Structures are given as structure tokens and as C-alpha cells.
Image (cartoon, rainbow, N blue to C red):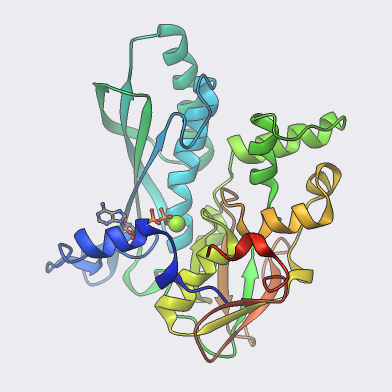
Length: 312
Ligand code: ADP
Ligand code: MG
């Protein structure tokens, strides 16, 4: 059993200090979801979200600039995908310890690639001296009634994920040298899944009007589903056998480790969403992994037998 209310102190801090400053006539949805929604007109809403990546916390010290930049942008954009927004643009606040032109050129290349892949022009930002960090603010839009929120899951809905899980956690373990493998192709795939997340923007847009709730998997499947369960006041029951695991992940990890990473690893930036069980067919990459039931929290058959998850 997993409950967002007992989850990390981060959320208690946000609730305690930052949660009631979001009132205003233009606020359609304040904090607590993947992005806030600001009303432009009766028909149109702007989605805004910001995410920071700090050296030594979100990426290893001395990582290449293009990889750091790509990941920072893609991870931030994923919150637009989770809301069903189409992208408009982004800004970047960059904190640098010193001016290293080689690193900055490399960083620029990653920004250029991610900007092109995600369809968000970099329209502004800030540059300061400090520890290396990148803060990316993303802006998108959608028709007012069609935003995908965390709060709409209904008892009887089916739970879907938009692709394999656990790859990014394995990729990070490979990047950090905590695991190794002689299968170079699998290693490349998994490292790329960590460094170059592919936000599911088109899927998010296509789920407008179909998904009853959605979130992107940034903190780990169980933790992120707990946010949907809590916001929607339902229980989500997951069948661990249905969770999609990539061939590359199976190559480098034991079945137990692979499932651990898939359930709790984070950083995959897949979309996890709920739909009515009468919904029309979904794109082929979407896999049904569970159901929405009456109750609260997240239930998964693999949880009771796994010590590693008790801290949730
Ligand atoms: P995500 O993983 O989707 O990026 P987070 O877990 O970072 O979302 O944040 C959860 C929610 O809390 C979001 O709606 C976010 O906007 C909000 N939030 C986080 N930090 C703050 C803050 N300092 N002030 C106001 N809202 C915040
Ligand atoms: Mg999110």
C-alpha cells in the first residue's frame, strides 16, 4: 500500500509553505498537478511548469553539456505531455560556476536538439554564477476543457503506461558504474533512456477527451500513481506481471532488479493514465497495467514481498 500523504518530505514542504499562494481570477488549476493552468479565454488555457536539475543531484558531476541540457529540457517538457498540452516555448535559467566555452558550446547543442525534438523554442532565460544547475520553464496550451489532470480517475477505469519502465534507472546505474554489462547495444539503449527522455507530447494531445487522468512517470511508477490515487480519491491496483520491461533492461538486470527499477526507479518520463474501459483503442505503445478501484493508495502484488518499497 502506498499513499502520497506518507511520501517524501518534499510534498509536505510544498503543502506547508507554497500551496495557498495560487489563488487568482486567471488560475484554472494551481499547484499540485504536472503543470499549472492559466485561463486565457473561455476556450483556451496555458500550461506552465518549471523543473531544476542540479549537478551532483540530478546528473553526475562532470557530465557532458549536451546530455545535461537535453535531459533538463526533455524532463521539463514531459510535464506538458502529462497535461495534454501542445508546446509553445521555454525559458532556461542557467547557473554556472565558471565560463567554460567548450562546455557551453556542448550545452547549446543539447538545447538545440531538445528544442527541435520537442518543438519548444528557447525564448528567454537567465544566466548567473553559482553551482551548475539548469532550470527549465515550459509553456504550453490546450483547449480549456481538455487538460489532463491527476484528479479525474474513476472507479472502473483502466490504468495504462506508455512504454517500458525501469530503463532510465538502469541507465543511471550504468552511467554511475554501479552495474556493468558486456552487451554494448543494451548499455547504449539504457544510457540513452536516462540522458534523452522522449516526452510523450503527441500521445498527451491524443489523449485529450479520452484519458480521465494522467501523470508523467518522473519519481517512479508507484509514487506517481499515488498522486493520481490521492488527487482522484480512488485506489489504483497494479498487476506487476503486466508492467512492460524492455529487452535491454532484461539484459543487464535480474528479474527482481528490473521490476524494482520499473516500480520505483523514476526518470522514465512515460505517461501513466487512466481511461474508461469502454474507451477506443489506444496507440500500440500503451500497455494496460491495472485498474482503478474504490479506496485509497496504490496496491501492487509485488509490494508485500519487497522490502525495498517499505520506505514509501
Ligand atoms: P513534477 O514531478 O510533475 O514536476 P513536482 O513533484 O516537482 O511535480 O511538484 C509537485 C507539485 O508541487 C507541482 O504542481 C509543482 O508545481 C508544485 N510545487 C513544487 N514546488 C513548489 C514551490 N516551491 N512552490 C509552489 N508550488 C510548487
Ligand atoms: Mg510530472
